[in-house]
Image (cartoon, rainbow, N blue to C red; front, side, top):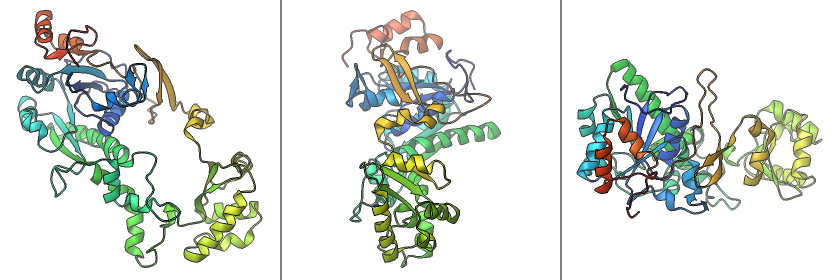
Length: 412
């Protein structure tokens, strides 16, 4: 690990780790943001003429995309023309000081740009090179375009996320982007760093969002393999197939989530609603389940959501509200866990975002700053690497780099 790191790591378990981040849109940037919150110095590298597409996605807060602000905090921004030879020299100077490179292009693109793993490894044999794609570096789909909906469709998730007429219903969150992309990126980065600590060698890691999201189907596939005919044409137990594990509409149009999966919870629920005859139907499937669901649907229509929740709070039955987006910030538990924060931004005022999900007691993760303006840290990073003011000025004049702090005349 190089000692030539820029200042700014105030703490966290990954303090001292430098990550060069070429990722864009949602999965890679969310993963690198989580790593940055944990203390890594993440340098987001963008071409000033073709920056991260998400910067252009509405809605906007001031001049900045709300989406960009949401998953690029705690990072530094370096804007340079990395397809140009001079920009590539900067990249390889950075590689010699870095621990990890993250890229999210289709297979072979970084090689064609002259920024691939083999050349990076020649400069720094300890470099960890994380390549995040939709389908992986090989296989029949490797070079196909895709998005979250495609990956969860192939993974079987969409086929188990069904509406009342058993047609696929698109989930609210992007499951493949987050669980298959961002979270797997974090796991891969930490695992590769641990392996390097034992072997002294870096490596390239092939990350596929389709591969990464497939473990979400572990239980469903196990149930399918065990009883393919029994469950054919029906929702699987934890995907809407059980009346005891379902969401129900209340009298005010809002919903509750009932997850009385174990008999101890279900029996308390049945006693609470004075339905002892339901006790032996906890795992009912098929027609019997549909009849029970109809009765439970009618039952939950007799009170508002909050009335059900308040009454259930005194009992151990796994019944909670289904919250709307505008209710999340006021949830007392999420507030107590500091899962929503606000930070000042140079052009957007105070920006809200979701807090750090992992609570380290000894080396706490810290959200250090809001998402950077394009090229905000370019000159500072180069200066810290030993570039002279004259060389930095020359790179500006040649339009190889863009420093948002200096606002040079360059068309973006």
